[in-house]
Image (cartoon, rainbow, N blue to C red; front, side, top):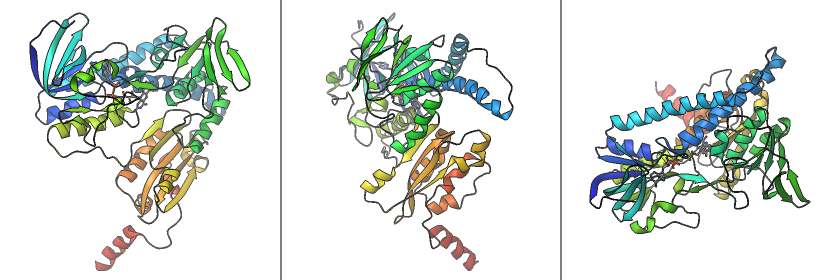
Length: 479
Ligand code: FAD
């Protein structure tokens, strides 16, 4: 309950301290604003957001543990004689917490050093320029803001037939908090979160079944990129039930239905990873004259403004629900509210899945480029012919580039293979910087590296020197 009726004035209020909110707060503080961040904490967040506490960082920590075990076993062929006697997931939880705590302390320190005040509590709009903040033990208060940025992120979606119970039915948050590897588990949903968790638990020794209602995995990703991942699922012994719908949970296990009838999977645990919903429900948005669409997202303009004084960023706006997208929007929103020219118009937002092998994309796919009417040329290079990949014991996957021939520029890069999430940085830069194929071809890439794959993946379409070579020739001839 909110007890204080007198509202405390706040210059710029940020609701939620995830990668969207804290970056926005830091930027606004840098620009001289007095910033207050309200963060409710709890099991799904805290300073650093879902990303730091229950998302990006914990999941990548688990994947790293699983990969270390898997790689140790895989390197037997190279002469490594080692045996993993077991996995102590309790010790993993301590290690993971130490990473999360250290990074959270780092963000808290940054906010403090920038003079940003953080209030612990849950914010809810109580008017166009007013929020009520309630904290479990500290009662409540009102804040009256000049401007505000809503950055409350998202939460896991539950299935009505399979509600989370924290025991047998877990969200990704529950799965990442397990202190023992289950003997068997079903993952419901073959999106990136489901596959990342499924692959990690399979490498840690669990018997994993992935249940997906659609007829393919990773539905938002170009299908050709998913094929090496599907092959790897088979190699890891992961059963993939496509076109299968969850009916419910019984004592014997998870009941799923497909076109050929129903079956019961005798699994110890079920992880439901069917997506995330924007955390906009309990914000009292109507009090601030704000609405949401049918998915619960807040509509914003290119400056991320929902009204002239209120911005919204991150998972609760349209676009990929990713931490770096939230942070980039946070900077734009802060700039816009501080009167600086700003627009969120990236040419490429890198999108990754830390599956095995990893998938990463930036810019347009071939289909998107053709649909946009571009003069498309496509090239690719396989990791099977990359020397560094060979020394890593990895052969699967490829890098593909999409080029607009007429404009002489790279418009898209896709990769599936080892460390694709790192490799995509150069692809993203190429698309964002409007690089020509020649810019990449003319850049010396270190050998032996996976990154050599990018120039090799460019299409062979150039019969005459492009503008870069022509400019260099001109400089040489005038010297
Ligand atoms: P959040 O990070 O969700 O932060 C919102 C904050 O607001 C939370 O701390 C919450 O406690 C707080 N809050 C909510 N309501 C209120 C309120 N009323 N008052 C006060 N505070 C409130 N993204 C990647 O880019 N890479 C990855 O590898 C990746 N892996 C992921 C793995 C998993 C398992 C999950 C679940 C997500 C992953 N994501 C990843 C997605 C990423 O976590 C989100 O896109 C990102 O956290 C969104 O940032 P945000 O700032 O919009 O919101």
